[in-house]
Image (cartoon, rainbow, N blue to C red):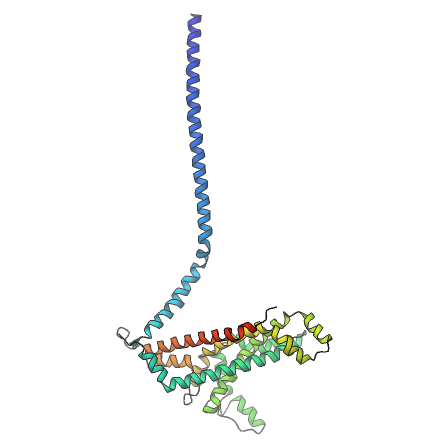
Length: 339
């Protein structure tokens, strides 16, 4: 019985060894399967991370691009398409193909030529005089002291006032009977002027309003540019007995050219878009002397309901702004000195 029991026990041990071998094989298989699954999960995580790194910039700019697409690109494309149609705003459902007829009529219209001339005069005056006055003020006020800071704030304050409020204020100041400007002129024995009622003075009056509003902003930008110029450059020039105005002309203005170029571009674009002051103060008159491109387009579309004609004017305005901007970069871009 003891030998039989021992034999049985040996058989049992053999079975246990076989079972343990099988179980260890299964464990190895399970361990390999788990390792493979872990590697797959890690590869998937790496793939997701790389995918997120690729699409993350587009996710961030997506809302902004959607906003531009809805409120900029789509309207611009729609205006371009409408410029080829005879389309009245009184009957939105009916429009007929007109081809380039809107553009031909627009370019042959003497009123449009007069409007373009008014816009060119206004742009040249507001941009040229605005930058010159701002530069002179910046050179004068670029110095420490509370007094100069207060003057800078006073000159900058018109920039933060809405154009509607400014237009109403100047409309009262230019009143021929009760206006402040004529009261000042009459106090010095000078007869008052019909500021907004005379074609000879109406456009200069609008230019004056634009200068009053914009010079302060231009001055602040130029003061910031002046303060970015290293003092050592001016000190070295003064030690060489170079006159102050020669330093300004030969050193300060070239080093200030990035700020001047920025203001030139922005002021030019802004002058092409003038609308509020015309709408409130003159309505394009007298005798069409203050009518400019944006207000002319508004009249054609919203007062005469000629949608296709107004769309063609908008396309030409966009082309004009783009060409003038490119001309600035082509003619002056290489003369800008970045220090």
